[in-house]
Each structure stands twice: as structure tokens, then as C-alpha cells.
Image (cartoon, rainbow, N blue to C red; front, side):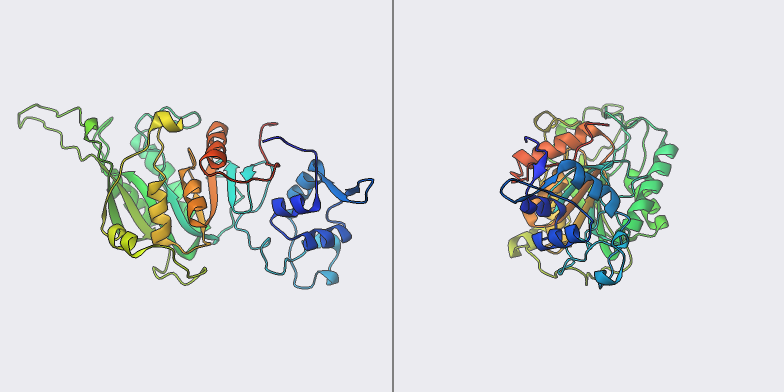
Length: 356
């Protein structure tokens, strides 16, 4: 979309996720400044808004702002919509956002943009370490290094998630390329070591048996290979399985509930060529996880955003969504899908990392 250099009060408030009244209070306290048009209307420059975003991460939000110096706080919104956001906005990582969707171009192991104990549900499909040609990730680690990497990012996710938060982890049942490995069992064990508790496993039948191209010793007991053409979604949680936080408003239908609580899901995978990503998962996967395991308005995180399927599902289901990806091109792909497939009516102002 076309970028502008100056924005109205309403546009600035929409971008920051606060009300126009709060913009006026912030300007009065000197937290943000504007210029006036010949007709007396306020205009906020792009540079001013970006400066405010950089500095706002250090502000606190006291109940009575008038009792504090202007540099010590951010005006608290009446509905607490701004200060309650699960993301600490930093322009060096924030690639794109609306009032409910955020894309961060960052390393999930290093980002400081996600607040601890703020996430209701994580839905993700991490790299499988099967030599997929990602732009910014080595998918050919030794298996030991891969498990060490897995433990690191699972530890970060454990910090991000609420005590009653859930985690839907899409991974292979096993690994055949480069040697037989029990990936599901190994990763589930690591998740439990990190602190997650196990709830259940969903079998995802992609209905793609054409991948079975190797049988080992054909028609012989010498060395046959057994390959299950399925993936799994391991369902974990942090401390309490019963969810008590959030709106407590569900949007799942009776038919969906009956079908999806059956632990075998049958739907097709996503086309790499159509999406333009080497390992996309279909929007149907996060959509089911989100509707089954979270309330309307909850905050969903995908620490390996890839092509953006999880954020598209958030748009479809009325959830807030945060996606993190280390690769700028994949962040751009996810943004493009949100604007086209998601049909976001986005303010003509988006944070990108194009200048870096």
C-alpha cells in the first residue's frame, strides 16, 4: 500500500491501538507532537510516530498519570487496550501490524517483543530438519543439535505462555530422511522437560500417500521401511488444563466440536507452489486448533510464522495474532497473504524493515 508522511489523529490512534481522546492527552503531556494544517487540523508525522513507538517500551502506566512526570509513563487507556497488548512494540523488529495482528522479523530465541505470561495459545510448525531449503535457517543440523535447538525455543515459548495457556505443536511422527528418528516422542519428551504438561496427540492425515516412494527391501523381510504418511499435533499446556482467563466465549459449532475432538483429522496439505513457501501448512490446521483450544479475543502466537497461515486463521476467528519469523522474505509473504487472502482493510501505514 502507498505510504504517507503525515497522518490524521484518527489514523494515528488506529495505528497505535488507542482512542483519539488518548492521543490528545498524550500530546498535552508531551509524549507525542503534531503540526497544524492551515485549517487547524492536527497531523502527526511518520517520524514522530516511529519515535514514540521506540520510546514507549520504557514507559510505565500508573493509575493516575497526573501524579507522575511525563517521561515516566504512558497514559492509561480507559479500557486498558494499549497497555494490555501482549507485544512490546519495537520498530527494529516490528515488520507489520494492524490493531490485532503483529508480524515480527526476529529470531524467536532472541526477541524481546513478546511479553512473558501473555499468550493464550501457541500454534506452530517448526523446521523439521529434513533439508528443506529455507532462506534463513539451516535445516541440516545433526539430530543432537536439532534437539538442542528445539529445547531452546520451547523454553522461550514456556515463558511467553499464560499459566492456563495451551500449545498445539505440529511435527512429524518420525523422521526417515538421514536416518530413522522418533521425532514426536523425542520432542514431546523435551517439551515435558522444559515444563509443559502433555494433554493429547492429534493425528493429521494429509491424504498424501504419494510420498511413499521407498520401501527398503522390496517384498523382503531383509530391511523393509514402514512409513506412516501422517503428521501429528501434540497438544500441551503450561500449568492448568482448564482455561479460566479470556472472554470465555467460544465460537465452535456442535458439528465442528464433534468432528475435531476425534483425534484423527483428515484434510489436505497446502501447495508449496501456490503459497510460495517451501513448507507451508494449510490454514485449516491452525483454524481448528484456535477454535477448539482458545476463546474469542485470545492472543495466539506462531514463533515460526513462515507463510502466515496462523495469522490468517486468527483473522478468520476473531483472535489477536503474533507471528515471528527470522526471514524478512517470509514476513513479506505473510503480510501479502494477510492483505490479499485476509483482505485486511489496513491503514496506509505499516512498519517494515526495508531500511535496515
